[in-house]
Length: 172
Ligand code: PNS
Image (cartoon, rainbow, N blue to C red; front, side, top):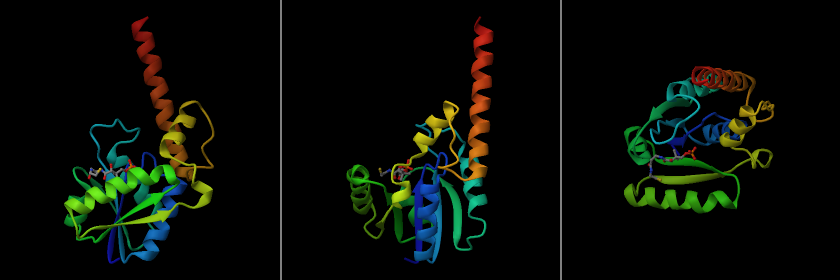
């Protein structure tokens, strides 16, 4: 793999993602992390915030670049002259969906291959949604995300709580 794209929502990036990033970066000449700017989902973090958080965590990885993208993944892959897409597989449950996406992408762009990396067993249960759910209820997330991401998530949750509280006061 000369140039590979690792796409995702990364809302927020977890230790599971970082494990895939490190391993993919050692396999590819150049790794572009594509952070999806998805208008149909309401992410916890804006795409700029997600890009900046991953940039900060990968600043010492010379062959890793982080960019936002919207639209079709294969268009982003082509625009970056990449030849492969990296996806992590946590369990069999991921496989059906991931295979469907990989096969669809290959029909649209036959020159782009998808490479699956088996997620480290340590993180096979982990997802950004679970991290957000735990943090939303005031739970501890330090086992799942690096310290600086934990701070960002907790701050976001505090901001949300304040907004909800203010809304409640306005209504009463
Ligand atoms: O981290 P996620 O949310 O599982 O990542 C999903 C992602 C970004 C890989 C997928 O939603 C995607 O590729 N979106 C871009 C739109 C696209 O190309 N769709 C066609 C294939 S489904």
